[in-house]
Image 1 (cartoon, rainbow, N blue to C red):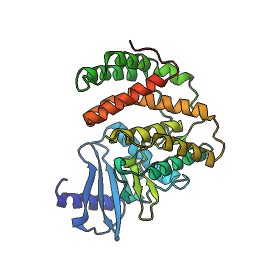
Image 2 (spheres, helix red, strand yellow):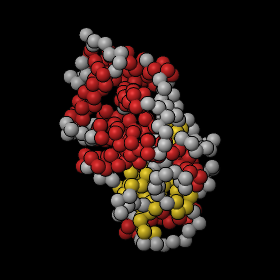
Image 3 (tube, helix red, strand yellow):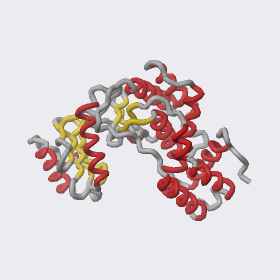
Image 4 (tube, rainbow, N blue to C red):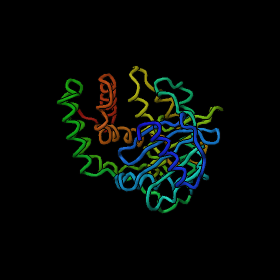
Length: 331
């Protein structure tokens, strides 16, 4: 499927399965992602407009991938019309409950790299995210939308092992022993801290909210894409991940404007109604969501970062630990 002829055949097959007989321009078909793992994304032009088709193959994709693809179909069919943000327009899909999963969506331009985003864009997206979370708190969601999974003790053990491996390998000289010990103690406390920390009212979360999943129309309107991880959870998890991905992708000392992002999100929460929590509690839960994310979810992805980016991430973790209410000496 890597040659242009094979791509065109694949796309035509996808359109046929969706009940369409359009003839596409062969020279304008390109692969955006995947293929071998069971899921692939193709961009092309249909009726003079840019579109993408996402195809997840039932007998090649792992069960989790197929389930997420099915969830995204349901999102576009049932929730896209009621979320208070712009999403890609659905042009066609398979039922999503059996067999291969196909989505045909209107395309928009990808967002630029986060390192060149102006502060106003970060603030604008964060404000929209706050409005989205508050507005969706009061919406009755269908039963197929899953709850965000709790962090398990097994995940914590795996994260501890991964940080130890990093500290003795690629991260040698970046993670001092005293910091590593503090990280290990905190990771072990994650399930208990999660259980007792008030994360505020649960809401609909994107689940994979970062700049790479934001598109932009010619008029400047943001388009939120890739809804396969949609879930019910704490809004601060989306916000923390948005910040983390942008922060990790940059090498400049300044990085994305954290304070402006947080202030804009909080303003968006208040724009949409009663925030349901105090600013102090919000700040505390956001700080914990970010720290937990770095410690538990990020170790497998450190290898994709440059040495400069790794140092910045570790320094950020150290600062969060140092600022935590129960911080103790590392010596």
